[in-house]
Length: 622
Image 1: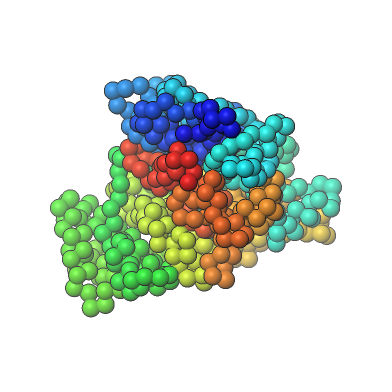
Image 2 (image 1 turned 135 degrees about the horizontal axis):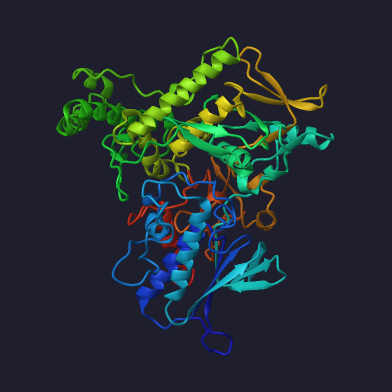
């Protein structure tokens, strides 16, 4: 029990900094645990956000509706439990779809994609429900301000806020999300070129909703770096955001321009826009259980100690991808029992392996049944134009539109009935296992940097994190309308001092070089503690409270934290048990911290992390 100097009871004060998904679920789990206690303890929970308390920056509710989620609404929940017979409250609340159906029944669909603004409205609904059902003695205080500094203050911490106020807290949970890092390398060269001249502009990578895209004049040639999820957001802002319309035209879309669009020239390493998510055929509480990609199988070669990702982990992951691909083909051809029987046969084959560290040849086993497929090759899948050259723009455009159309056909089959989309879902469904293997120096330093971060991460993101299929149909329509051009693979964005403009080019497409006046970086920057420009991060770094995690000689750039419940480790190696850091700032200390939602009724790492922090905080942070 907390008491002041005179011995009177005082409220325990908790500050949660950042009210995006991780901050909210932490508050939700604290509220749920306090309700279960049935005590009269006094707790003040300060939820602090610089943009919008209850939604955060990425999901703020005043952003346009053309920015979409990339997970179907039926598979998204911000609550840690499903509804029951009681009121909506911490631990028991509707999924995004269930809430959406109540406020917008004409547009809501369990297999549809809500806007990010709607998700923000949903999370604000969660926060209201949590607050309305707090136990007596517990208060939720919403603070709209940036936290500019945190320093030790007696047994707690003093937070200095941008509104000029100070807040003393017994425990602090930092879920600060994406920040803007200092530019380096090619990005800095582009920014410096624009800064030194009148005319050219460079817009650094960030959430598209926070970029000054509306300032770009109609007809301006604009280069867009990256063809990932943020690329689709930028395209939506340049088209739907400027009054353009996509209308059905048979089995495709046709774009009706407003005349206010810029001319977009986009490119990336692959030259291929991020493939679409398969049409959802899975129930909301679906949870994939790997057959081959298990800890026991992976640890057969290295029972303890750090792993080599390519040698020890990747073969089993690719075998799992092959298994889903082949089993799906057998099921579609011969019926459900054939697919199940094949899966069981592959599982039994592991027991008879001469070398238990090498997975069975799944494609060879499938060939016995007349299913002939190539082994999964992430390089070939994520770089579909690799090794090819194109004589001119027309030849590449034909290859591009063919590849996009083929991907859409697979997406339409669905994430259960398309062997390809079902297999690619394995990469997303197995993220949790990779996290458990890789986090906290689970890989050798070289393999962590080169194999996981530099090689696997981009390929996994390309193959497993796609947009709604409608985005690819819009791309085809924009290519046809001449509003969009994809320059080609191995795209380059360079300053051209002679022209006083930027030039976008592809070395493998004949004549592919176009001058543009603006370059928009449509990539979300990777977190890096050493380059983070946030005032709070700088001060925590200067105080030595936040330090960069090192895996051997690999300085990762992620905040060094303990294992759960994730206390920052200071420059003296001491864990600050009154502080917790979770999510984006710890990327590379842990892997794939971008996750922003949970499946209804299923506790993923998002909820487990939040619950562990809530439990520790409510014990007094000791």
